Length: 149
Image (tube, rainbow, N blue to C red; front, side):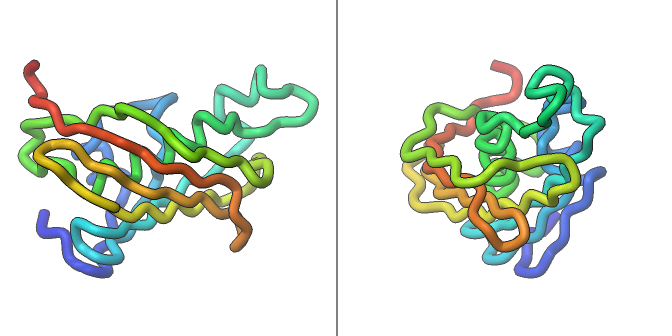
């Protein structure tokens, strides 16, 4: 798949590119803004998410760590190896801030920008929004590793 500006990536392609599956696949769709530099991912948050059973049953809120995971998975789509010869592993999360709750019915929009790359290590800045409001932001470090390690 050639990653060009404006390219929309659907769930079938996301599942081909990322190893994550239910209940841990946190990106439903994505759109390349600048190839290999900037991407927007989308997560439609529904009450059927398994984590809402315990977080919290009477007042469901998406866990912040899963919002961060959604941003990290979105960033992984920027530099994923199309031939599936490698996976992206999260190495660190810095400067994480959670600004508003994400609840069932929200559409999470994750904008991720690559800050730098050195060999097979990447640094990304992510921002998750709901209805234009910042819900979370963080800086991620990730590494490409061979799939059959």
